Structure formats: structure tokens, C-alpha cells
Image (tube, rainbow over all chains, first blue to last red; front, side):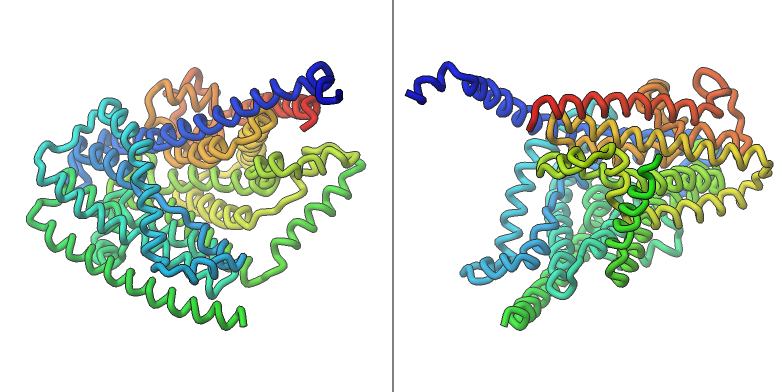
Amino acid sequence: MTGALAHFGPRRRVYPSFFAKAFQRELAYKFEYFIGVFNGLLFMFIFTSLWEAVYAGPTAATGGTAFTREGIITYAVYAMLVRISMTQEESGIPAKVRSGEIAMDMIKPVNYMLMTLAETGGGTLFHWVTRVAPIFAVALFAFDAWPPSDPLNWLMLGVSWVFGYLIFFYLNFAFALLAFWFVETFSFQLMKFGLFTLFAGGIVPIDFFPDWLQPVIAFLPFPSIIYVPTALFIGHIPAAEAGSLIGVQVAWTVGLGLLCRVMWGMGQRKLIVQGG
Amino acid sequence: MRDLPIYLTMMLAAIRAKMEYRVTFLFLFFALVTFYLGQLGTVLVVIDRFGSINGWTLGEMAFLYGLMVFSQSITTFFFASLVNFEGLIMQGGFDRYLLRPLDPLPQLIASQFEVSSIAHLVIGVSALVYGAAGTDIAWSAGKVAFFFVVVAGAVMIQGGVRLGVSAICFWTMRNRSLVHILVFSSKEFILYPVSIFNYWIQVFLTLVFPLAFVNFYPSHVFLNRDASNLLFSPLIQYATPVAGVVFFSLAYLLWRAGINHYQSTGS
């Protein structure tokens, strides 16, 4: 009886609400997506505007570097694409360490680091299709930055992007593993992000840094992440130098990979001590 | 106004909560300074290489940056709780403010303190002092007074952005990506002189999303820059307080409308 009444009573109004809520949820999701794409284009627009203005200045010419006006615009567009093409979820591990959930990952019969890498890679691939591709398509027309046609440039991009991505992943992973020793890792990640912003070449190419600073930056892992793949791709760095630069990338990948392994092993023991 | 002591007590409690762990607090402060030096570093590198950006020298750029970060410091001090307003709405935390017999907005303002506010203060003041020294600003009493009015206007504009973006949450429940783009990414626009952008973006940053008033226009007054080429009228360099009042009022109206909407759904 009450069940039948419910079709006529005030409760009937809940169904349009369910309908509206589901619609709203989907809309919010789509909205997030478009904002994300828009955000990437916004940064491209700001940096290309910056370089247009700088290169139009009276003192400028090329700032004494090999970048022409067209060259730096192309660099700005592709550096931003490389930056957007690398994604990572950073808060996962520290949160798991704090909650103890990480123990569940430790008892799984898989290498946790490779598992995380595989998961992150899958997410990144999805991100390519949904974010990077549309941003690339719009950027082609909006900023008049056509990619090189030589397959060699694409090959160099492919190889150096993979190693750049691995360095990016291991670096973030190492910083996340600090959670084993420190309650709060947000500060470390913030510092890393500051150094990344400045030295990875996502905004300013390494060539523009003061001459005394450039050799110092060359000893950091950051330029290998964005600057090297971008500069090789747009032909700013000649193919003859690709071998040594990719060699440096490989060295960083191996070094940081080992560091992560050691930290993971030590952290695991440390966690057991705490748990006991 | 008679409720002011309550708000002050709340604010002090919020500050004490953040300062409880001294080492964490100091370390976070240090990390924030590093983070912002990274951002500032990109600007410095460009100036070091090219001498100026669109006619703005190192000292002038420092002043421009200082005005942005200093006003941001005060904005963060007052409006920190609005950055994660989505969380308050989603988890029902906002209902707690509605239940108390006080206006929810001042409660929100007093409820949270962010360490970044102090980091901004230190960086902002340093950049302003450096910029003022490097450009030989002749400080008169009028300029000093105008400086504080400008900062108040700039805080109202940036606070208005946060308030307006939060108000949207009353309808959509979610606003994280909007916060990301309108509160944080958008600041990249005023890291540089707005004059580097094309005409329509300048119009947008003046009439629609008035960030150009935060630092670009008023800097012309302090730095004695030629204002004859500014949009609409040279008088725009004095208009930051007006823009602040108008923009914050509009944001507040949206906020009021949002709260009424939120109550009516009863969620």
C-alpha cells in the first residue's frame, strides 16, 4: 500500500533530482576536461606573447643565442606540449604510507616501483589522447608552429621523451618515498617543483641562462626532462649531439632508478620497524 | 562589528594551529620561498639576457612582481579558506558556518591561515624594496598613501576572484579546476607587463577579469612611466581602488545569490 502511494506522494519528486544530479555530475566532469585543455593553451599563449614582446624589443635581436624569433616561439609551444605530456599522481604514496595502506602493496608478489610506473604510464597514454592531442591540434593553427617533417626529429623526440619521462617518474617517486622518513613531504615536493619550473626548460630554454650558470644546470637532471626532448625535436640541437645528450639521460635514468630501489628497500625496513 | 573579538579569536586559533609544529612550519616556509624564487627566476633570466621586457627594466619588473606578490600575501591571509571551498561544500563543512549565528563569510575568513601568506609577504616586500631602490622612486606622502589604497584595491580584486569562484560552487558543487585556472594559473598573466598581450586580452584583463589593475596599471604611477598609451585613458593608472570595489561588490552579490540558492535546495 505504501509502495503504491509513493508514486503519488511528494517522494515522487526525488526522481527528477536523481536525473538532474547525474546530469550535473557529467557536466562537471566535461567542464574539468575543457578547463584542463584551456589551461594548457593559456600557458602557451602567455609564453608566446612574452617571446614576441621580448624579441620585438630594441636591445634584443636574439639575446646572443641561436634562437630566432620563430625558433623561440616554436620552442615555447613544443616545450609546453612536452610538459603537458608528462603526468604523475604525486600524493598517492605519502598518503598510503601515512594510512598504512602501503603494507598491502608490499605483500603483493610484484615489484611495486614497476607497478606504479606501469599504472602511471597507462594514465599518461590516456592523457595523450584526451589532452595532448587536442592541444597540439589547436596549437598548430593558433601559434603557427608546424613540427619538423624529418622522421629523424620524430625519432629523437621519441627516444629522448621516453628517457625524459622515466627521469621525471623516478624523481617524483624518490621524493614521494621520503614519506617513509618524514611525516610531511609536501615541502620537499614544492621545492622540487620550484627547481623543475626554473631548470627543466619548460618556460625558459637553458641557452638563456647566464653563461656561468649553464654548466651547473647541465649537472642537474631537470634539463633532461623537457629541454633535451624539445630542443632535439625542433632541431635547435643538431642531431650529431643527440647521442651524448641521450647518454646523459640514460645515466640519469639508471642512477635515479637505483636510488629509488635503494630508498624503497630502506623504507620497507623502516616501516616494519615502526609497525613492530 | 561587535562580533569582531570572536573573529579575532578564531583567526588566532587558526594561526596557532599552523605554527604548532615549528620545524614543519619553518621548512614549509623555506620550501615556499624556493618555489616562488623558481617562478621569479624565469623572469630574471629573461631580463638578464635581453635587458628588459617590453621596455620594463629589472627594477621596474621587480616592482611589478612585488606589487602582485605583496597584495597576494594579504589576499591569502584573508581568503585562504576559499581555495578549497569545494571540500567544504562536498563534505558539508560549510553547513557548520551556516548554523552559527554569525555571517558565514567573516567566519570563513577567520577560519584558516596559510603559511604561504608569510612567504608571499617576505618575497613581496623584498621585491618591492629592491624595485623601488633600483628605479629611484621619489616617495611623496601622496604616493605612500596611494600605495596602501592600491594594495587594498588589489586585494579586493584577488579576493573577489576567490569569492566569485567559490560562489559558483553553490550551483556546481565542484570548482577545483576553476580555482586552478582562475586563482592560480591566471596570475601568470600579471607576472609580466600586460602590454605584451594583444589588444583584446588587455581589454579582457581590464574589463572582464581585471587583474591588470592589481599591478600593471598602478605601477605606472609609482614608476612614473608614460601612461599615454594605456587602454582607454591615462587616468586608468589611478583606477585600481574603483576596480577593486566594483569587482568585489559583484563577486559578493554572486556569493549572496549562491548562499540563497544553496539554502533553498536544502542539500
